[in-house]
Length: 106
Image (cartoon, rainbow, N blue to C red; front, side, top):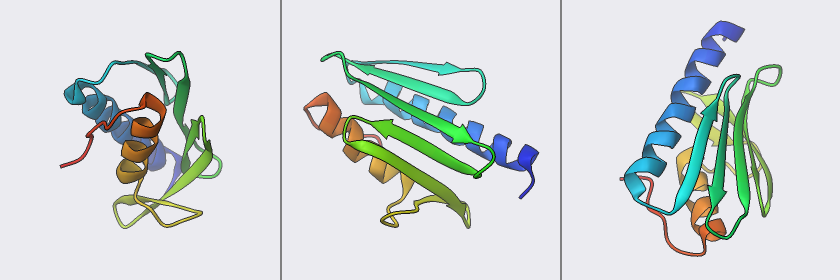
């Protein structure tokens, strides 16, 4: 995939995550910034950053528990470390960081 295709796919995915956070009703402030960066701030003051990384063609997540990389594979973003799908991982990481269950999928 070329850089333009990657950016389009990654930006659409970041927008989907933003919409899922909004729908969840969780007490999370978020801002989708230019350049493919989504910042989340939780009620406890902690932050999470989800961004696209063009050179690696990955979406990176920086959470309190660590850093995670996801690569596009047949229309899904899959964790390079554990094979977990991006939205599933985000739901788990957000819930852990918020200190309460946050439903982002299904």
